[in-house]
Length: 110
Image (cartoon, rainbow, N blue to C red; front, side, top):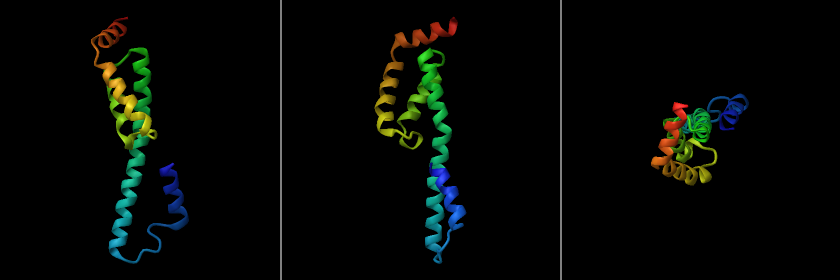
């Protein structure tokens, strides 16, 4: 949504419309790059979190499941950070258990 609103804003207003001061223009560009960079990062991280969750469910890739749990805890990479933080902590704690690692190893062998 952030990226779509940015494209819409550029179409309607144009780049840095109505800013005459150099300091304001610099702040505008830093804010724009930061905001849309976070949106792009979130857009790229979301499939990793989904595929990591599916891998955890199927017992396929322990590394991908751990990576997804870590990404889910980072507020910038998740649209639902209030749920992502506790669920990511729970997933990491679960993935540390030896019986879970054995389950992933068993699923890889079969």
